[in-house]
Length: 215
Length: 373
Image (cartoon, rainbow over all chains, first blue to last red):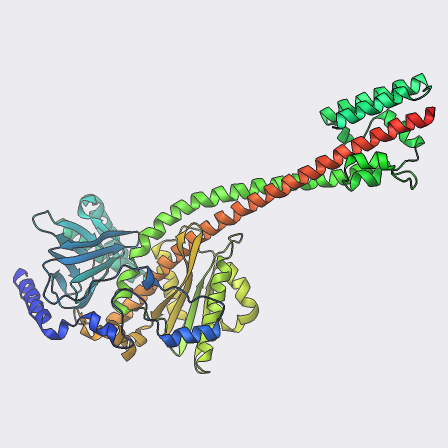
């Protein structure tokens, strides 16, 4: 598995180095009607005129991109570090931190994200996310599910619904939950209940595998 | 000043030529008693028995003077014209009304002060949650772009508002912008349809009157349990299931500070629109690979649903925080205004009370003098 991961990430690095993917967002902004790199909304002049006709007395509304910090443009060479943003609904777990690499659990298995990774949209499965930076011990979280985006400027966004550091889990409790959900799945009366129980079984199985616990 | 004046009247009575002793004595006694009553505030109960006896004999009517709050000196000296006997207690009737009003204004002041404290404490908890959720919508905006000018054939305007009132102007602001978005979409032609999904009772009340046929769904009582992601995921699910749309415009108030709330419109595209040309160019989406066997179309489907839930969660928390902040400042203004009204009422009450006491004294004493003279 490690060899496969190495091959895939190596392949992606090579692909990223190709000039086709190394377009700068700054170029796009100069063309009319393209996304501006500074996190500002793409508000065309036509929209402003139309707004004035419809609501002459009201200011233009604000847009969520006005509230965001600007993203860095695509650099010419592959940067040394990957900038990681890891967000949860209740907090910014990791906010624009430069790290060496990140390993996420995507639908096809574990995926490593290094600086210069090809732009990707990956849907995450219940599993481990580990953040590696230099000689520090990797921070390991168990992620319930979410998405990971890798952009051309070596910024990785990981959005997860629940993520818990691994040291917070109780092995016995996890085993008990797994048994409970398996039992629910077997005694499910209709499709909906079966699907719900199946979700529970998947998450618990992944958690047990992550903890190194057998049923 | 009034004390000296009464002393003066006592002196005058004494000096009147050959006043009958009993009249003088009772006049003085009454005046002294009046001063005493004024000091204890017992005068508000409307006069002593002796005063009543004199009032029956007198033809002076001083009710008019006392009630219009004219400077007390004018009434007695100017000689209130007699139009027959004023019914006893008439000059105290308006006092009672003012006193009732004062009591109710004081109660209102206490209530609004309490509401402000409650809103302030709720603000603190919700603000923490809202600030924590601000990261959630950003990855989607970076990936998929923020293009408010994109007008699909079917627009869904999701308006977030509060269930309870007394929170300033934030609900009116949101309704204003929703209405403008409707008109904007209508400007593009008849084939551009718009529908409303209304969250909250206040926007429902305002939009129902004019735009009932445009409203697709109402969602209310969202804050019975505190706002959480599961609830928003369910709301997003309901919205997607029951509506066909190209673009969702989410209108809410972003919390900037306790006195500043920014009306914001978030634009979310449907999966079909995301796969279309405009959106692909906007977000450079064709340069993104997808992991696994899923095509980009399927991934975009999941992505659009997740985006709606996340942006809705952040928007609801921001709106709830704005609600608490707006309610706090509205109740604060209300408390201050109530205090000012109470001050003014107190002044006018005291003035009229003192004027009525003075007038009664004048009546008594001049009555006594008239009896002797």
